[in-house]
Amino acid sequence: MGITVTWDNETRTTTRIVLNGSYSLDDLLNAFRTESEMIRGMNHPVCSIVVFDNFPMSFPMFDIARVRDVLDEVYPRNLCMTVAVTSSPMLMHLLRTIPIRVPHTVKIVSTEEQAYRLIADRQRVR
Image 1 (cartoon, one colour):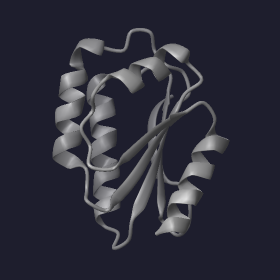
Image 2: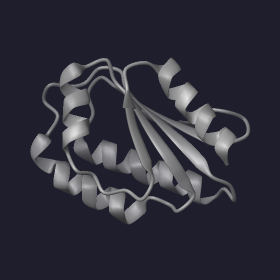
Image 3: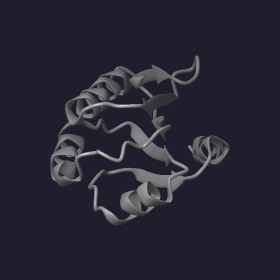
């Protein structure tokens, strides 16, 4: 339960963050920092999949500005795409309407299959 941050493949072209169960905002921000350090260590473009397995209804929405500030601060230049995966219509709407400033492509999908397809298409283009 909580948050895991791992490489999704052996070539280290995709990271994977899984948010499952309860976690704090600090846990989430630390996961983004950990992922950023992993990506910065690579000399090639990297994509990210963020899976919201169980979206907590108690998520501190008032701290979205803090999340945005951390994302602005930590994300490396070689991160080329983030795909958020959620089956929650509420979270999907929220992610689409909150202006998170990142210098790369962000997509929101409802299945991991869609996420992998988008990343494969992106990596083929590069």
